[in-house]
Length: 303
Length: 323
Image (cartoon, rainbow over all chains, first blue to last red; front, top):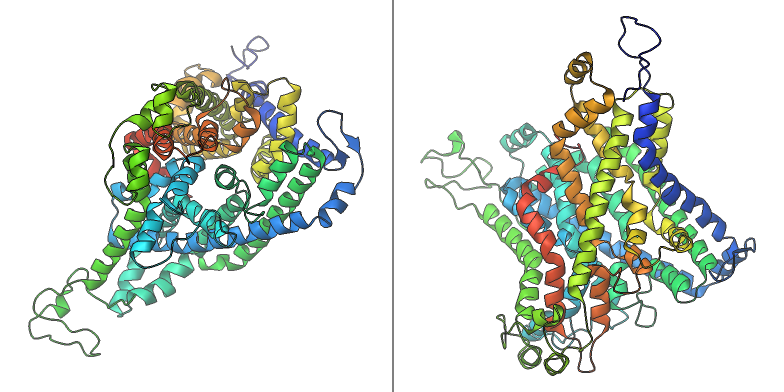
């Protein structure tokens, strides 16, 4: 099989520069996947959000009705609030902890074994993490509550208290993701030239000064990138809540994705569920662009 | 956290016996090597993180090896209590219903071998087909000359921006209309051929392969397709392996989409099965021993894969692509 035409001329040039045929063949599978399962759903999803669609009957165009309903829907606003609270706790704690681990690794050791151990939670699914912590944080029998009682606190109903449920879910997901985030930041730290630290040390700068004056400014672009990625991931929280609380107690952990899922698969309101997805998409886009813009503003620190 | 400056590597100027205090008076250097308190504190923090990271794994094992009755009376013991393999037996359906119920199980039949097999089929098919399909596309974007190459690549790159949530519902309707709900093919299809990330990742690597090798083969009369299969793919085995591992991991751990598509045992994968197992709590409370055994079984293949390839995976995490 040859894409070059061999019959036309016996010119010294062995083949034509153009590989269009072969290229089309090579990108065909990926293109089919892209068009059918990414681009087409993007368009139909938008379309469904303007329809009444219960899956039994074909979608019926109802214009902006779903969006009007969304704006007047208190559960939507509550779920948005819950989601934002989740993201704030999740990203806030995770970033600080991951940065601390990354800096400690940078200063202490390059050991692959240590980095592997740190990454371990990332290997198990959200579902496994959720069930494990459901047990560890169980009100009566969970080892963490036994530990709390032992050091003199009252046991906490982490999963069934309206106040605790979102911080709990957020911290469980911190546990799963902090190692991975730390390794991303660690990779960024590796690119900071060591002579900067040596120079700072001969000048008598302490660890904290070094961190504030060297590490943080030079890490900023990568930190920003990590933040964009983790925030977008964080907004799409679902697995942990689906396995543990299903959105309860009293909607206290009903994040947007949970609400979308409920509308689609419990109420069979695909039209409204699609409108909710569009809302989430818009939020994610706004965040991405804002952060991108902020990052660009801070890019000058990278040499 | 207080941090005192301490020489990590003894600097010659301060090591002398006469140097009992430095001019600023901040640090006092003794003739002997000072105890590196900062370093000790840092290691202590690190060890605490490691404990938090690893304790849940130990707790899964400890609980899985305990019996439910003993767990209820002695929940605080750090070692397995009423040690038996009942949890694992229930997971693999080796217990009859009465024994299962008497040991705190739900007695409902769970077909873990089936779920394990389903997960293996889905993750393997997605990994093999997707990696191959994306490698071909990446090669076309990196090395073949054709009109519109950059434009088409930008479209692929742009699709990275589409969050998964947005495609889930429409894809479900698509799979439903294709009659593929509750089939393994339905679970695989959306990610079977495409991962824009994989294409991007591999294109970066192909771009860095020296053209000379390729050109030599072309002069020898090989077609570009042949160059790709016989030369480029073997040369790229390291990044391909890394990518395949990451793809396998995410396919194995995927939950939301599988939850939408699979309804019965014929297409149920491990993650979804775990959720169902957890929801089947008997009246006496959840079968923690069985649940922890199940989570261990579900996590084990990934942990084993990781143990084998940890170095490769750990070193590939970063932004600069791969070397």
